[in-house]
Image (cartoon, rainbow, N blue to C red; front, side):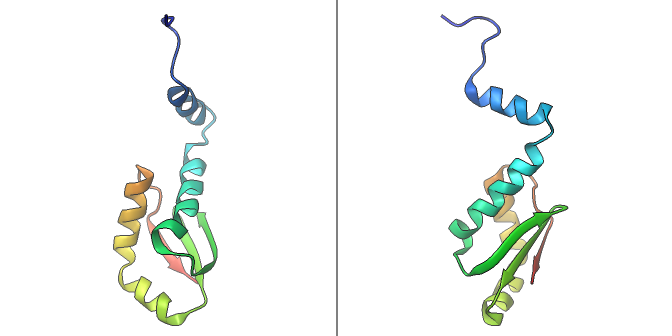
Length: 92
């Protein structure tokens, strides 16, 4: 039997992330982790700073193709994250 102040583990973790103001960093880490799953593993370095995703790609051909579909990638990443985590992608 549940007590009135009991909460699920999911709710407790969500509340903890918001109380300690870690939700943004948690979501950014999730975007970095899901990048190879969505876009493949052709990157040498990937990180997020100030809602900008920085991606280092060695192949200029792949870099140009990704520049063309940049807005679609941003939408797909934010959709998978469940909130607006990324505003811009910068290819290095």
